[in-house]
Amino acid sequence: MVIQQNAKPSRRRDPIGVGVALLNRLAKSQVIDRFGWRKQTERVVFEATKTGFRTAGALTRSFVAASKLAKPSRLPAAKGTGRFDLTPTEDQQMVVGVVTEYAAEVLRPAAAEADVAGTTDTKVLAQSAELGLSLIEVPEELGGIVSERSAMTGVLVAEAMAHGDMGQAVACLAPAAVSTAISLWGDETQQATYLPAFTGGSVPAAALAIVEPRALFDPFALKTRATRQRTGHLLNGVKSLVPRGAEAEVFVIAAQLEDQGPALFLVESEHPGVTIEAEPSMGLRAASLSRVLLDDVPAVQLGTLSDYAECVRLSRLGWCALSLGTARAVLDYVTPYVNERTAFGEPISHRQSVAFMVANIAIELEGMRLVTYRAGSRAEQGLPFAREVALARRLCTEKGMQIGTDGVQLLGGHGFVKEHPVERWYRDLRAVGVMEGAVLV
Image 1 (cartoon, rainbow, N blue to C red):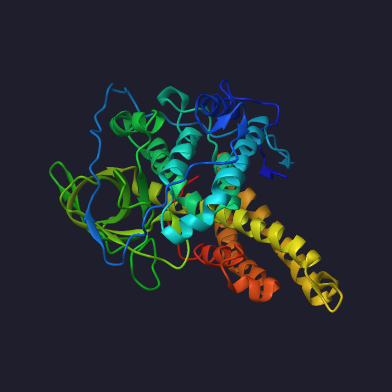
Image 2 (image 1 turned 90 degrees about the horizontal axis):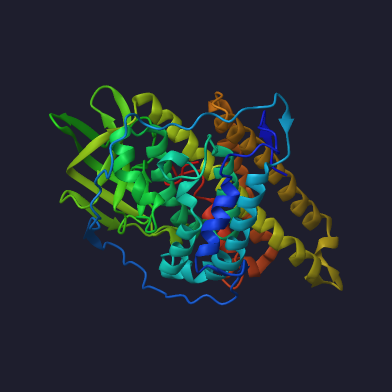
């Protein structure tokens, strides 16, 4: 069930429903045949990026405003009903249904190969772009598919994607983080310049970069610096754990704005001062995580200083949603396993230690889901949600890692080998506590 605090009534629909718009885009793509997913999808496996490999920023398309906007377009907050509503809207049901099928039929079968290769197949990325994931937070008047804030829909989409595979989900959702940031905080020039690329037929690779490579990283105490210039800013520093950094055409970079505080900046990767360095990781290998080195890189500020705090919270909410999907994948896998695996002439689920461990996974997962949905619902309605996000992050970080550990434990020796996906989910779930940025709802 979808939980929405003071959510809009389930019968209320946007003039152009999110689910209808996504289904229309999907019907025109090659992802499906007559609304039935193809069982066999051609995949190309790329050689994993070697440690220490460096490259210049990706060559970008020309980001030029085709038309001039009179003022920035902002989505209004969703309207509440004054009750704690557990019913998803019709639009949300349709969106989640489409994304769930995509995750099961495309992401899950490709997960093992993507993890080994250290990258997500370009055809998988193309299919995710055809779903219109980068449009969920873009206003209709700018080419998007919504007429009011839809943070809760973003949470549900991230959860459904991660149930297929968290690493590929991050790779697929990375451009949507940038389009969402520009929709929420960009001025009229920035929206007119960049959003048409994200709403067109060829969605650019893009990334939201906040993390820096140092111990005890604090997103509100950044080492990356932004120096004010006559025509903008110059950025200097290093960003870490950036998804698809080597192919990204545009970045949203977090940097310290002199003595004022942290802020967001738009950077195009074609500038000579942008260098990409591979950063192989324990988990999220399919997201092609990279370091982005910035040396006197021109940038323009995105939003205000207060917008940065909201960005961090919405990103953490996205990671909580990803943990929900992966944790549910663990539960869905270990439940039939312990019922079918026999020892001493009976299923191991007959042992109390095993049964209680599976029950605890289900209990903790339900708690994680409740606090995450509550935070998402409040964010969608424009209500204060800092406390709710803090609770969700704490719970999803600790309990998510515990669920990954218990999943491996329940499989015994099978949990240690790559024949079963639980070891990959264990590695991915440990990313929730260290990641900042990358996704945004």
